Length: 143
Image (cartoon, rainbow, N blue to C red; front, side, top):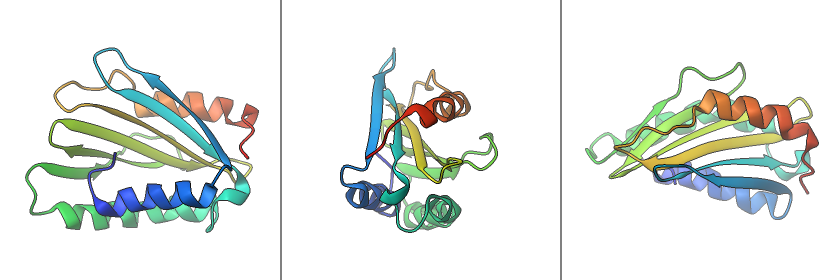
């Protein structure tokens, strides 16, 4: 779960808008936590997938402002993602999360992420997770 109200609301709004027009999978990670990937149908997101992704940096900045005085929670952008992808690393107490968002070539929104114990670095890299998810997204029927 994202570490702030801003990013939690973003994800909740995406899921509510999609209402059955998305599909995803979740995999448990050795050492605790999980990784996931969700593909939203092109008609599931308003604004478009490209517009959602373009707005993520603003959402990350808003989240950072929300957390600036909270020593137990933090958020920062992920810099080593494939072209077109935007993401963040968050921490809230003993839980760390990483999310990445990218628009596919067919205007669908792909969201991938991990959640794991904060004291145990995830064994799944976001770049690798995105690469695999992007490779298989065309095969996924969403909604």
